[in-house]
Amino acid sequence: KAWRSSIIHCIADPSKVGNDKAYDYYEDGILVVEDGIIKQLGAANDLLATLDPDVEVEEHPDALIMPGFIDTHIHYPQTDMIGAYGEQLLEWLNKYTFPEESKFKDKEHATDVAERFTNELLRNGTTTALVFGTVHKESVDAFFETVEKQNLRMICGKVMMDRNAPDYLTDTPQSSYKDSKALIERWHEKGRLHYAVTPRFAPTSTPEQLHQAGKLLKEFDRLYLHTHLSENVDECEWVKSLFPDSDNYLDVYDKHHLLGERSVFAHGIHLCDSEYHRLHDTGSAISFCPTSNLFIGSGLFKLDKAEEHSINVGLGTDVGGGTSFSLLTTLGEAYKVIQLQGENLSPIKSLYLATLGGAKALRLENKIGTLKPETEADFVILDKQATPLIANRLANVKDIEEALFIFMTLGDDRAIKETYSMGERVYAKTIMS
Ligand code: GUN
Ligand code: FE
Image (cartoon, rainbow, N blue to C red):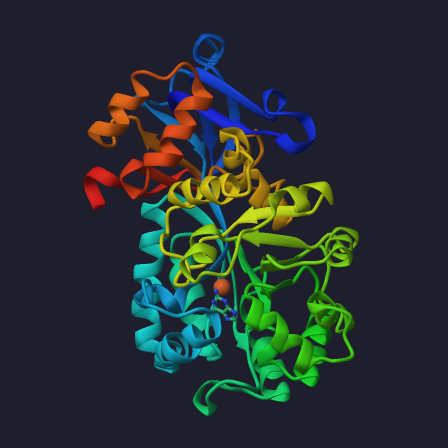
């Protein structure tokens, strides 16, 4: 089957090769998919005549096709607590988050939320996410069972948390090892699923538990490590007092062998030079979560510093600290975060962060994040008529970069016309919204 529309994808990091060389755009393009895999991408002029006559061509004249969005940090159990008022991180956790997460002891509740969460991802064009569960292993079963049905490429893990949280939400170093191990054996690399070892953040794990996390990473291949890093000033002070022997926040994780090519650290706002160096040297990635960083008042992410040190950066919504499932909306906020620091976030770099940049952060760039042939056909169709305002602005843009910027400034779930996973339609606005 083939899709005909305007088509764009990033093919390289614009901070390395420049915006012009970082993307391919076809004003009138064709995307050919077979058995869930992209087979051809090119201009309609060149490709149409060469297509097998029995290939069905679906036409989307007022649309823009791009790779499915990749959310590199999100908490599915926080779906029903977005917009919790008035607190910064540590109080926000105690007052809102921990009570909400306690509900996931109940598998039925977890499944209900997992289903609504997954629908929300798809209606926002997100096809892959790196997802926090709760401390309960049932929460991860519920999530993987849900996304497996739609054959989505997803990464999730059980929270490890053995101190500085209510008793009803804590595990122990031994139980967290044992439960994580059982989940890894059940789910890791089953189809398109991957497991992430997930200590919540340094303050809620004893050194013994962090040691167990490191042990898991050593015992299994290609596991992810997913946690929070240097998000909030009070949190950073607390980490200093809890781990007086560590040189800095990142060093707490480093001492337990938690850095590496599949390690993703959410936020990384208040970092020193040696932390940037160490993230780079170990191939670790940062998830930039602008709506969360603004909403819980954490601070402004220094994208320029991460780029200077050639650190892989993906984009995260961090729902429910973040306020939107939409990576378009999240890019609109990312732009403002960078503006507040006197710089610009270009539309192409934005597209990169939401697609190929995320794929690179997750080491999945050979499978997702672009529309290159032989990669998986996870893509979205954006609607150029999504709203009257978007239609009007798009009628007056000079080029595709400006059009992208309009989608990021004004777009949200309304801009997503259809979402595809492995060439199968998993969301359509007209039918399913
Ligand atoms: N740090 C530790 N836990 C959390 C969480 O649930 N959300 C955010 N944003 N930061 C955290
Ligand atoms: Fe988070």
